Structure formats: C-alpha cells, structure tokens
Length: 333
Image 1 (cartoon, rainbow, N blue to C red):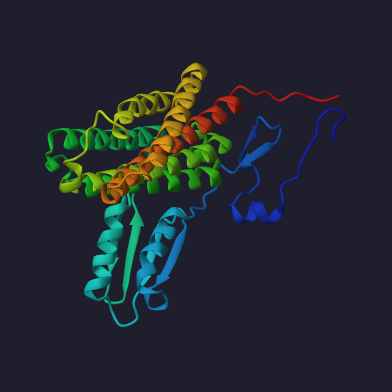
Image 2: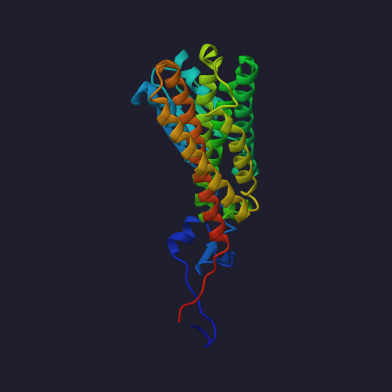
C-alpha cells in the first residue's frame, strides 16, 4: 500500500526485460471474469515467432507427415525441413501433400538440403465458427449425395468424395491450430471473441465434426460398391434414418452461434432413439442367411449409428458451452 489509498504490484524484472519494456512504457491490465488480473505488454517492441526444425533423416518415412502436421498444429510460423543428402522425389511429394492439407502455408525458401515452410496468414483472420460451418456443409452435402447415389444407382455423385474428405480434414487442422493459438495468446483470445474455456470446448466440437466426416466418408466408400449398393432401398433401415439425422444435425449446427435449449434437447432425444433402433436392426442381421449382404448392411448401419452417437456428443458439448455462458461467479462469505 502507498499513500494510504493505493495498492501497487511490482513487475518481475525478467518479464520486463524479455518484453523490452522501459520506464514509462504502458501495459494493459485486464480484469478477467475469474477475478484474475492479466497484464499485457502492448508497447513491447519485441516480435516473436515460433519455429520448428524437422530432420527427415531422423524420422521413420511413414511418420514424417505426422511430424509436419504436429508442427503446423503447434502454431509454428516457420517450419524448417532438413535432408542431409538433398531432397528426393518422395520428399517433395510429401511436402506437396502437406501444403495441400494445411491452410495459409507456403514454401518460401528452398535449397538442396533445406526447405522452409511459412504460415502467411493470421489465425484470427479465419473465424472459427465460419470454418465449423464449412465443415458442416461439406459433411451434409456428401451424405445427401450418398443417398442420391443409392437412390438413382448413379455412382458419379461420389466421384469427388476423396477431395471433400481432404477439405474436411484440412479445416479440422486449421481450427485446431487456431484454438491452440487462442489458448496461448491473450490478443487472439480478445480478437476472436472466444475465451479459453469456450475455445477448449470448440476443440472438442471440431474433433467430433471430423469423426462424423470420417463415418460419412466410410458410408460413401460402401455406396461405391455398385453390386451391393444396387440391393439397397433407402426407404428401409438403416438408410431411412439419414433424413431425420440430417435434420437433427442441422438443428445442432445452428445452435453453435445461438444456443436454444429446446432444440438441443429434442435433437439429443431423437438421436438416442435412432441409436437404439439401429442397434436392434444390427442384432437381427445376425440371423440372416445371406451373410455377405448382412455384413454389408451391418457396416452401413454401424456408420449411421456412429453418426448418431457423435451428433449426440455434439449436443452435450453445446450444452456445456450454454451452461458455462449462463453461469455466474459469486462471492462466498
């Protein structure tokens, strides 16, 4: 206490030096909902960037892409890739694949033994909710095309299913990178308008979207088996439940921005009922004599049932976000 009415907190010397602050520089002090104070060195002249070094010679060939994706998700601004004896054709193909599944990254420098990949966009320039909605539209469109393909016996509806699956995966990586940066940066947390708790729940949501997309893709692959798909009647189980699932999925997606408890509750109840119906259907398939077609139907039903399960998880995540937003801090005496 100083002067009888003021309180002063001194800043750690190491923190001041690392941010390049000097006397009379200003810092921003924020009062967080939890009661904590956050000090932000807005006038710091120091610019930082995250760099990752990847040496391909030290990695198993099949896991190199995993390390590149891990570097991207870490929020790296620059990824330096090394190959001691120079890059071969397989390396360049790998890097092209990585560039294609990343958003806003490009090769900015290349020598015989070093390739530098830089992130050229600000994570805050891609609204997370908009990216989630793009994932939703891709998943919805693919599933509707699967039904159309089975109805019309025309597999051409699914010709680009691999490309659309890749786009869903790329959006998932982008959002997870953004969430990681929000969790680390107070500035991005403010500019995105999403607090850390909500960002963590959105991370659960995007992974749920990805799993839904994976099972839609699995259904698409099954639908491309023209011989077995020709025997499918989309008005019968399990495919007859897809239309109502799409309705529930649409309702849940619309609640990401503006939660409506009644709609979330209804969707979750409907999804549970569908899961039970599909489980009973799968149990009956074991008594069929035509084991080949029964196995095909079981695989289709299992993917649709998992769509229901993951959409039900989505409803729970939305309830978590709604409850957190509507909670309040109180002071205990």
